[in-house]
Length: 110
Length: 113
View 1: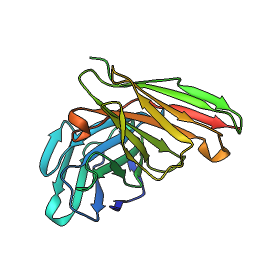
View 2: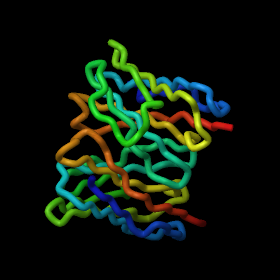
View 3: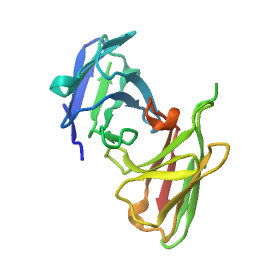
């Protein structure tokens, strides 16, 4: 099945700093989702981005499907950004089954 | 617009028991998927229901079963609970057979003693 790797696994930032999270996947995909999992376990949808670039406030994402990676940018980080960030992709074969990456654990400190 | 809801929030069971978890999808969604998330890991796909039938299944034993009702809500049943079944169980809903963005509920945290 499709493999999804995320980097870095852990990230500690001071409030106000910027960061880039990376998601690599092993096969062709027709969409990709980024999630933020808060400390209570809720997965919050950030982006649904099969290709190109999208922006939502301080967050933006870029997916380059032909090169099999996606990037999530967080600017001017806040303590509320802390948590685990996952990317998830379906394969072309089982298009509605999401395979998740291992996640990036982000801690934003004052 | 209500999001995906799950019940119960937390559950404690003992080995060998059976458990039923429930999920109501977002309004307008017809597909429900279930995922298991062990501590420190990403969610793993269990199965998906569409038109009241199991359409896809991940690498989980037959102890894991489910059901989808005509109103699109769904149940996850786990029989003969093992300690290793302790996890956060997440339900996701999507529209048009699941080939669209998936939205997750808050999860049910199951502890098996």
